[in-house]
Image 1 (cartoon, rainbow, N blue to C red):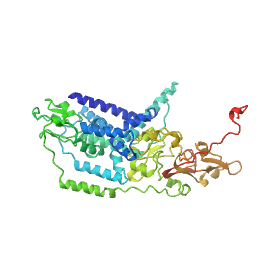
Image 2: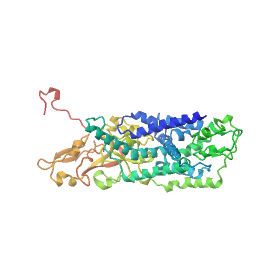
Image 3: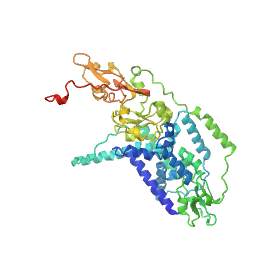
Length: 519
């Protein structure tokens, strides 16, 4: 039976490596379809994506649910990368002689299912804050994007510099843009928290805080195959209980709490008398049921469900604060611009779990984690940061990888018609006015020519806006040289609009008919 554990470990390692490669792929060499197919296997993102309609990625959710009904919570020990990260910590502490033997502890069902209830109700009420903070795949993504990615990119840049000295240019320098100290500190604190819980209490996070674990714990009670203690062979040695990192085996009573069992099969592998087996329910002998939920627990859960909507109230994100020119530069910073394909601020914030996969694949690094721009309920959800970069007019990468449906797929032609926001121009801040100096950086970079230069004084030209064809990509704002405030900036559309197609002017004399080069 030890082969079951070996298979489980092999699958977990493969999935962990694939997840890590996807988040750390700063060269964008992995096809978006591969990434989408992989993340479809992650429970909460796939479940969230159901709100956007049934797609082929919904098959991943069906697969996870059927797998749980068949084999129990093996998702937690094989497919969940944060679960594998916890197992790695547990393994390392064991190697360092810091491991403590585990003992059976009654699962904190009250806390676990209470958090699940509040998370579900608050999500329906429009707040994803608990899901953002507790969902395992999103937390794993933040750890890699905010902590591991800067290290990988720094190593790449250092290697590229050294190789460049020898005339080898197979690697290139990659800028680090999306680092934010508060997000970095939060991610570091969460990683430290996970490491501590794993080292001291095994899989306690999975059985007390994780919403995916709570949902699968409910289904695992119905699974067809379960780990069974064979009483005739059991010698009460307690080895199975001591290696159970989910603290779900009571060796004295010879019972297993399947709410908490994550299907790691350590118990089967460690039993010296082969006293445990993994078999179908039809072969198992009836066992005593665990204690039923008492009335106080039911009352407490009911109170949580009834009051959760009042605890977390989503911000009214439908207000933009006025037309673009009525919104100051400082106020515009608190109106987050959402990625193309998200359709609008409220919809995006209600579906995004802040996994930051879109942040990790963005080639221009214009997507960065937010702080409180979406309100406390949208902590660390991505926003377009035009101070750091601008959105590539041809790029649709973020729309191809979102696991929750917060960003829907777009093809390049459709994306070019999405208006994320509109440009605002403060004439008195422009260096053409303040310094009587030619510029035109905004017009030069605008892909739709929504910004064009018109005569001002003498030979000076001044920007003029046509917001009908502006897509809000930030190509005008990012290169604007005025500091500390930009003279031209993008004000978010709370709900994305459709931009008019820019007019393409024909050359008076086609190039092929010209006798000489026109320059």
